Length: 181
Image (tube, rainbow, N blue to C red; front, top):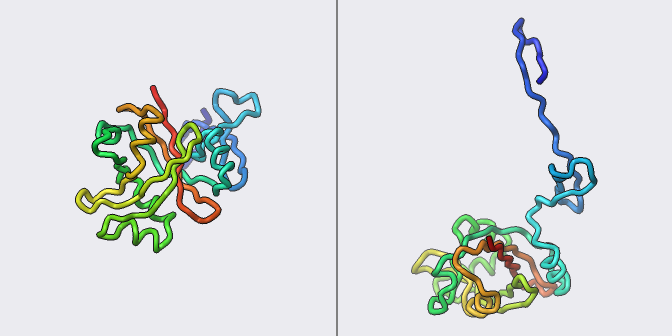
């Protein structure tokens, strides 16, 4: 605590500890509070796990952009429904990274959407549709979603994180990571 005198009054002020950080390729990286004595840093830039970054690099994908997360629900893993409902909080970010033509196709009334590829936690590529369902007013991944669920044994309550990136041919793609507790 530090005491300062302001207008004749003594005021006790706690000192703000600055988090040490560096900028690396446009990404702010903070030093881990648990390891203040070392030079180890944790990345708070919302990058996927290193293995997933390597998988994206192997496909010559662009730098991934964090989109959001969701705890999987029964409806997300139900083979009869065959779709993943994207959280509403992610819409603006998702649509921001789409081209005007892609946005129009996704939001068009015909529900055709666009073809996308999704990298799963194992580094496998899955083709599916990214579209808007007008009946629900929601954005979804479908047509191929069941394969990803089955191959990765997704369960209700798994935390799904996802990122957007592009292939060299400018095709929109996503990377999905699962965290199990």
